[in-house]
Length: 348
Image 1 (cartoon, rainbow, N blue to C red):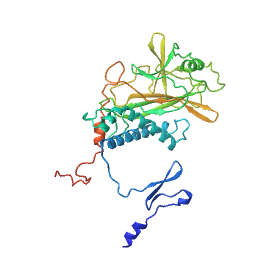
Image 2 (cartoon, rainbow, N blue to C red; image 1 turned 60 degrees about the horizontal axis):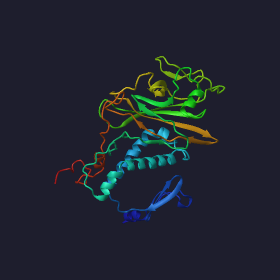
Image 3 (cartoon, rainbow, N blue to C red; image 1 turned 90 degrees about the horizontal axis):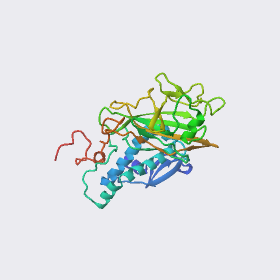
Image 4 (cartoon, helix red, strand yellow; image 1 turned 180 degrees about the vertical axis):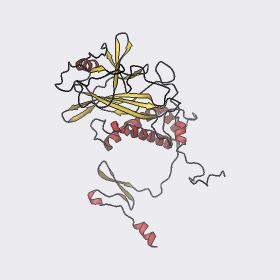
């Protein structure tokens, strides 16, 4: 009787009058969101719905969550107008959930209309037991600055520079003009890796570095940006480097066509195309432009550009679209036995 009375009178902890209550009291559950106390109706009889639409929604949510876990060193403050941390994570989740749903518009319509199209073969999506994020073109930043153009070309992650061929004589002003950015802007170079020694479909690591497009010292924009590395690649000239630069990043001039050049970037001291068929192969890239306007940080829009695979010069070796939506959805479906206990799995 006493235990039953305690369970009936259990209340939320904290003080609801000063906005610090948490837990359930009566028919309400209190919690805090974005620094404010909120509450919702308490569900005393929760279920585990498993319609196809609900399973698909769980897959989308998990795919975005896994991506944020890897990208959070940048994504927790890369959305202009959003406070770092929870607000930025919420915007990352909102934008990438929408991106994934848009990509599955036909699948969702087929489910809603009851069309029998068979097992969903769209890729790549995270299943319940997956750890690393699926290889998708996730939205990494948002803002009003005009973005720089970046792409993969023959195994190089590139920013087109038009007629400007990059050498150790290239000045900061020439580079700024070629990229269409402003003096003093920050470029954040991002590269994601995958295991290309077999046909896996997940990003396994991230590297990033920042370069301020203004030299140190007297900010003379006619100063040269680069000098040669030990292996012939270009590095930011330490004699002119901005002290706020961070990370080991290497550059080279990459010709895309007649009189068309690109700034190729890598995290390996080499002028060759990125490696493939290895366990730590570059698989995605992005470049974010950041600018301080007054006391407000502005960003450019950016999404992960995926490195092509299987066919073509400089591409990844294996097919990396193997994390199928159908498998991911089934991973959330409870088995018919309804039990998670080891001994309770006999066929009946």
